Each structure stands twice: as structure tokens, then as C-alpha cells.
Image 1 (cartoon, one colour):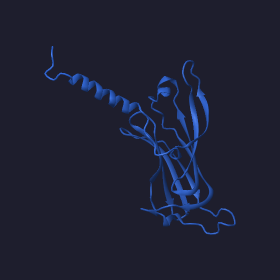
Image 2 (cartoon, one colour):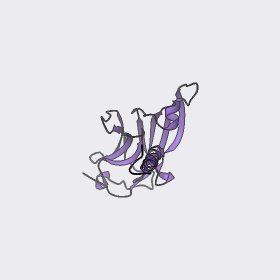
Image 3 (cartoon, one colour):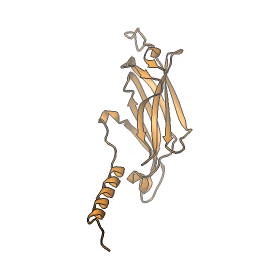
Image 4 (cartoon, one colour):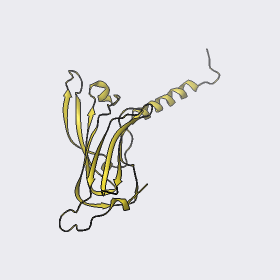
Length: 182
């Protein structure tokens, strides 16, 4: 059977190949500084012929608030799907944020702005760390959660960072309420 449009099937195949390549290729990042630092990994489930399931702990600095660092631990699927980046990761993520130097706000922010986001499955799930301000107590509040396009996830973790002087040279303490808008 001949087609009325010769070469159409090769165009479809090329288009399909480009589409599949775009799905499998990792997303480009703005810079290496945007990526969290791997602190360590621990195996949790042994697998004979493929990589083990692991817990991985990462650290990152808040890009908008100097003097705050967060650490989070995420499960990483092993097996062949995990190795290829095709496994959907679970939503169990823990979070701890601390003051690591004098706190300086770099710009105005919205309550609940993303501090960091990372894909947790090939298509629909992502992990997000968002930040806010408890102006009454002058405390930064960080929350991590994962969302799924279809059903979401109630699993989350919260960490707070009271804004305090950092040594005798840091006598003035900024108020987070001056840098966050509702």
C-alpha cells in the first residue's frame, strides 16, 4: 500500500524520536550553584543486580536570604528504573534549616515563594522547598513538600529559623516582615 504523502512516516518517526529524547534528557540547569550539595548517601534496601535504594542528604543555601542553609533527606529508588531515572520517587522528605551566618535579605519576596524545586519523577511529581515569614516572631519558615499533577501529596516537613544576631559585630537584626509581601 502506497501513501499519498511519501516520507510522512519518516517525518513521524523523527518527530517521535525527538519527543522521546526530550523526555529522557535531563533538564538543563541555570548553573551548578543551583544544585544542592550531596552530603552523603546510605543504602536502605540491598538489590543483587542493580543499584540499592538509598537515603540521600543534601545541603543548599537559600539564594535570597544570606546566612541560611537547609539540609533535606530524600529517598532515592534503586533498581534498574531508578538507575535510568524512570522510577517515581516517594514523597517522604525531611527538612532542617538553620542560621549559618549573619542574615541579610537580598530582595523582597512573597509568602510561600519557591526556594528550591526538583523533579521527583519522569513526568508529574516535583519536590519544592518554599519559604515564608512569621513576622510576629521574626522567624523564617521553610516547608518542603512534593506535589503530583493528579493527586498531590500531604506529606511535608517544616523547619524554622529565628533571625538572631550573629556574633558581637552583628548588632542589627533585620525583620523578615519588611521583606515579605502577602
